[in-house]
Length: 194
Ligand code: GAR
Image (cartoon, rainbow, N blue to C red; front, side):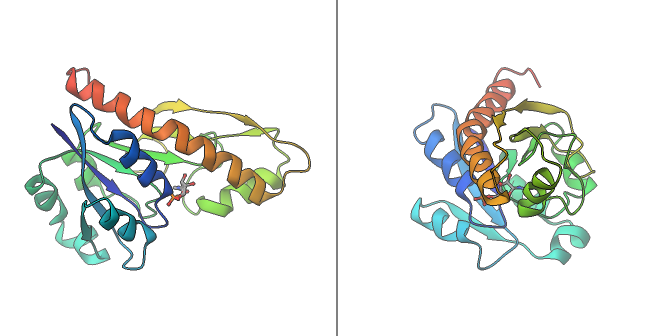
């Protein structure tokens, strides 16, 4: 089995889509949910699915660096960021080379970087009167939203679409493509291709 840890800070709708998609998968298993927010909706969802959770704080994450040992104890092979808003520190990227992936709710390299998350992204897309948007799945390096792109999906935007409409369209695409992308990266690892 290849063990996946999903990191999430918020509601966790992407995390749940991945959990549902990988249920009964022959070699991929969502082993752990990691969150930095005690009140994050994802923790309830994890409980419902009987998946173990780990709550982290800023000091443990950036200073004591004990997360690597914890992830190793769970034999984690792949880290999947799903609405996780803290920058991944260098020690973790190095401990998991090509083994950390993220979804961003815009067509990178546009609308990425620090401060570009959630509604800020969709507001910027709206302000610039973009004709399309969509999520990007990418490998994670030490910089926000800069790792190699794995896949993107696009949806057309109507001139009447408000930022909330854009958010809804993009999130619905995220639920379709992220589980498939996670499965694809899992297959790369299983086949020794990355
Ligand atoms: C998703 O739209 C995801 O792309 C975004 O947060 C949302 C989480 O929703 N991530 C970022 O903005 C990262 N820069 P969810 O908790 O319902 O999956």
